[in-house]
Length: 110
Length: 120
Image (cartoon, rainbow over the protein chains, first blue to last red):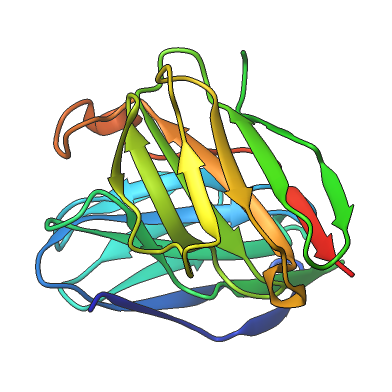
């Protein structure tokens, strides 16, 4: 059974303090790993898809990386507007659905 | 439409009543997914459709839950004889991709804002 575990559950940073969020996964065959951002009261918003180990993608202050067992979402010099819950999800080659982790709630203090 | 539209935004119902939740996906999106999200948790898969065909309903909790997408566009998730444990945010998502590996750059889901269901 596909499993996705995100850590930490919650992270509080000062503005400008860089850090990383972790997503560990177990699938029989990875077809894609997805990162989403979710603001309170809203649906998840698509950020990145990573398809193979070693791949990296960047968007503004965010960079996602992928290994065979985990993915990291690096946030560089974050701003208060980066505060949100970040969700990781995997697509197993045996299924079309995405399996989500429980999310990391990120708070950036000014 | 411009995004995935769900209605109603909020639904309060009495235990034992039936409810129907509606999802209007992005025009042209062939795949439609239903998820349920508890507070502080990630979305949990319920079921999905490609066009009008229900491909996987393994996530539906029991036979009180059903879904349809008769014309391959709008979908309805129906919960019969609601129970308090059914209270949650129900989210719909759609995507262009039909078969994995095609249209890679459009592969991510677009989620709606959800329907908050409260069973009292």
